[in-house]
Image 1 (cartoon, rainbow, N blue to C red):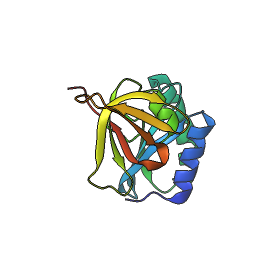
Image 2 (image 1 turned 30 degrees about the vertical axis):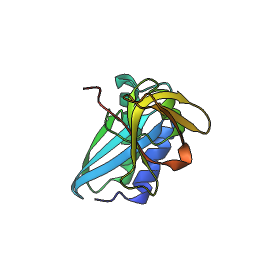
Image 3 (image 1 turned 90 degrees about the vertical axis):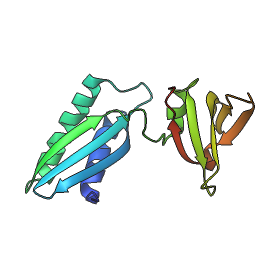
Image 4 (image 1 turned 180 degrees about the horizontal axis):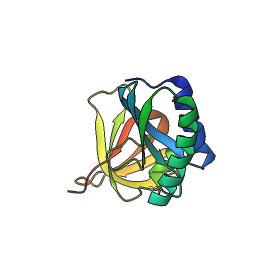
Length: 149
C-alpha cells in the first residue's frame, strides 16, 4: 500500500527535526485501520527512549492528518536486515560483515568485512581471500549487513 505524500512528508519532517533520518516507511491495512511502520536511524544511534520521543511527535502530526481513520504507529530502529541508505550509516558498522549489490549488476554481489569508510566510499575485505575492494557510494545499489552466524 502506498503512503500519502502529505503523510510521508510530515513523518519525514518530524524525524528530521529530531536529528534522525527515515530509513524505511511502510504502511499496511485499510483506510479505516491503517498501520504505519517508521524505521529511523541517526549518526549517534537510536534508543528506545528516542523512538518514543519521535513516536509522540509523529502521533501529534498524524492525529491532525488522519482524522477519518484509526491507525497504529510503530517507530523502530532499522534492525539488522534493513538497507543502509546513507553514507554516514556505514561508519557505524565498521568491522561488520556486509553484502553489497552494485548498480547495474543484478547478479554481482560483493561480500566482506567493512574495513574503512571515507567521503567517497567503503573498503570491504573478502573473508576468504583477504583481498580488499574499494566501492564508491555511487556504485552501491543495495547494502545490507550480514548476520555473523
